[in-house]
Image (spheres, one colour):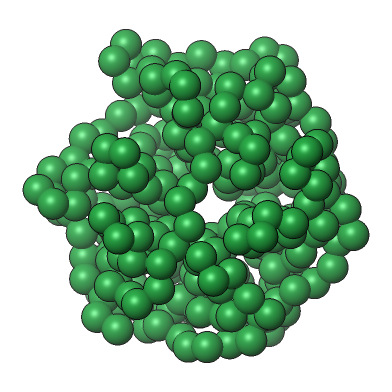
Length: 290
């Protein structure tokens, strides 16, 4: 598969790509810099917005302008026109400086799932939260090292989440009415030296997972059997999503935060956004209904 860079912009720690099929724009974040980008694939133009604090993930809203986000201080909303960020108070971990939001996704009923981690992921202080449509929230899971890639199968009865430092994708039974999860089990286990980061789940239930430090994406079928490995021209791919008019373009974020100055010179594409044209159709990412 041909891997090609997108846009003439490099993130320190690119993460969390989200495709908007309505505007045909791609969003992604520069996590530790507290910035997000919005790009147009057809014209290669992009905009940049600053939130003012580390930005773990963003998602689109169904009935409101702007975005819902998981930031250092918790859940909140950003309005692009006014360029103002408003935190939901109280927010999860609002006063706990040891952790930050790292990744998130919107469930099939329009609720936000967002996960935290300790800054370096060494201790299992991360939690998984659900932001309901009335702006209340619940704790769904605790004792996580690094909450990462999340998604649902096409049948909408199973939730998947990566814990990077446990080298695994975990599966949970998912109850669509309540948004509750249960019956945690390991779905895909990686070697101890492999660190799965972000991922996307396609319309066939297959997994496309970025390997942090592994210079590749790994594609599995819905049962967790490896189909292929896709080599990347950078060492630290971080996440991916499907976009483009036909939802067949795989868009990948990357990072250079772990690289030394010498390594950055040797890896000039690190931090760039990339695309791969595939024969697989992705799932449209849900929008938050609050």
